[in-house]
Length: 356
Image (cartoon, rainbow, N blue to C red; front, side):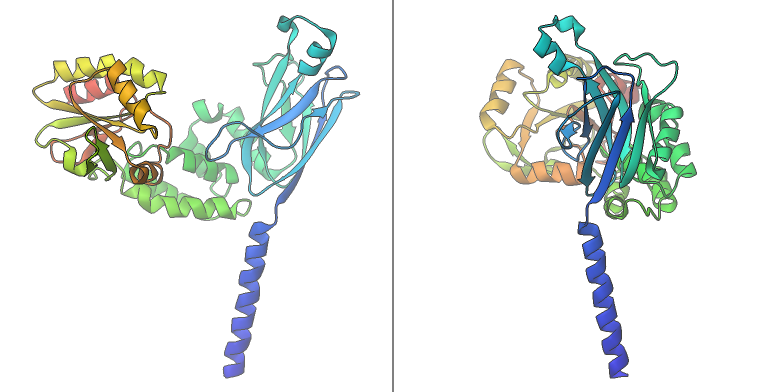
């Protein structure tokens, strides 16, 4: 009995170690291109990360005889853009700036080999996505999404239902869960029921499964998630402590460097004036520079309570609200302290208040 248990423990340890090693092993990829572009053009690959939308993978390669090869490795499947340009030719030949030419083609890089070819009939212009990538199951799934209208225009829920084990669905689900209080409880539960396996991106699946319980607690009808804040006097507060009671509250998350935040402030002020009997406003800056926050308030004075996230509160905003630096971000909280919704902008918030 003891020997059997010892054997099982050793095997389990080997499996665990093997899994760790598999996670650590990078996914090698190759992109082979056949494109009708002159010699001297360059091709490069940029991808999205958790903190940036445009991170280069490797060095750009020079196109010769209409072909190029890009190789590299990634830790997990990742969405990106394959770009070509003639910047070097323009510089070398002293051509005018209006002769600069770019193309952009969407790609979902995973382990394996991809082929990049020109789509017959598509012009070689920067906004036409003239090239198509094929060769892996992940890219095939992504092409299905592109054919349905892409992330912006496709029915993302229908795509996920049709591709429940795809790395693309895991990626889409994570993006749907960004910015708390945008999905309903049933939508979060639907993702949990639907996406239960993902052979091409086990790490991404684990991140998604870890995120779902948090997302389930940050849906309309739930109490507002707490954050640590600092007032203009430097005193520490919790968001739930400073929200006015008995009225609707619009929480305006902004930053001094955010132009669209500043743009919407006049609309927020008008909203507060028009609904003064039922609505109050609380502003929360995510500035990490205290001087910049105070300068922003001085340039755009507002009559309601002003706070800024502390270092802890800033981390909570990333983890719980999943907002990051994506301000402006708005919360409409009901008189009972529960979140009504996360409006896209103050105009939508005003419509919600009128309908209450």
